[in-house]
Image (cartoon, rainbow, N blue to C red; front, side):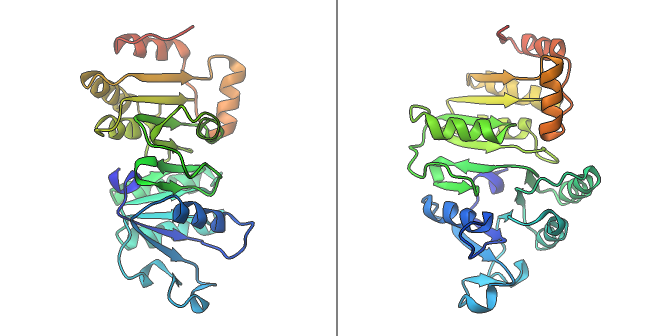
Length: 270
């Protein structure tokens, strides 16, 4: 998880020289955010003309990056994941939607077998404000001041809205979890709870994919006296259908979720 959220080095696969592309926007966000770690770039089309700044493959990089970010068309994602895992990469972020469930399962099986972390697919990225790290092609203010709020959102638009619209909210880390094919909200919560800068964590949840892990993370937060604020959607039939169409989340029975919150000693607003 540290390689995913606080890496010492990062490789951007699919950087681009086209100003209107995700690959170009990703490179700008990572470069201009203030991140002090090593940034490496991969694009076979641009490698020959880049004077060594861009390599053709991950294998050509001068060192193994901790975190590989894939800004690629869906058809190219699976092969890129295999290349990254073969290189021994410990964390990946995938922006592509990857709507084929069988494809996501294959990717997930490979990533889990390698013991790596995966944000996405269908993620809008991860932010570590304390490190100046912006792993996203989507616009977010680059001058946000770090604070003690961890944010975990199963909706990229909610994450973007909160980060763009109220400077009083000072985040430490913020994550758009995407489809949570491998790494789930429970994993992000547990990692944030263990960070010394975390004072509170907010979650926007459609579903809990790892109930046991989620309970363990919430119990760890309680031990450390870290408040966890959860906005849970999908209580109505319409809300559940919207969540399924958004990330494929199978929204659980709201009564079950309320029982979980009561077990953990918390309160849930009606």
